[in-house]
Length: 392
Image (cartoon, rainbow, N blue to C red; front, side):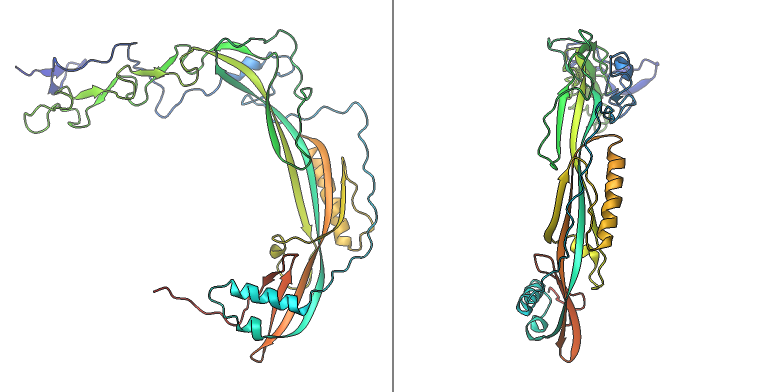
């Protein structure tokens, strides 16, 4: 058989030979030769203007310039916070020398390269307790936003404009327990409509990205030449230089993943409700020398708790730093979160965190360590018997 050059549409010959045995593109719709730009997945949503005329939701849908929706102004005065009870002076009980020594020994044992000798043989010469308070404010809020959503149309009810949809804050939802994060998505009634798929333009199929809609690709064995060695015709593509695209079976297009071939979408508005617990801590500076970062990892003894819809700062607490922190944080939370969300509950607590500074003598030198928190954590940055371990 005579091999003839393949003539391209521009009149130039290409490598390879015409092969009457080459499998043409699989039967089906014509290959699509105008795919989207490289790496483009097309529009991910219907145009935002689709909801511009939805009563009560004009311009509020996320993705079209919308975002978190501020709650409506209350028609009745909000309940006012009530002052909490005044708190008496609290003192942290000192831990015993035995407890301090045992905590130190356990800490040294947990370090693979530390000798236990200082913890066992060191002589405690002084123990000093420090009052350290941690004030915590929690504000539990509910936020609402709207966004478009869609799904393949399979005959679902279409109710847009049947009647006025309820407002975003008029739709009932069940909140989780106070101070527990949660999320709920609700389809807004009377916003569902049927639209042609915006990804495939209602065709039900989208160009194959692997072959750019051509249905075939350059043969990877001969790199499109049609020959492998000299005049040996490529046995993979039968000398054609191209092979059917396996991803689309040579059709050049695949079922649209958005409408799943249905050509139509049910488009509606989703209401996304989020419940979030926002927490801020303030730890009173103490002169023990222990870094405040250590205290964030331990618990203390709770000496005060107050939970209300809106809080009033603590009054009469012995440490003025706690009173000032409560005033500042409560003002910040109520001013910040009431603008975009609905405050459901606030809670303030005060913990007493025990911190004991231990001074001990070992080999004629003085050293210190700290025992802190209900967990009796230990901090000893300058432990005198450290060694370097070498793994052979």
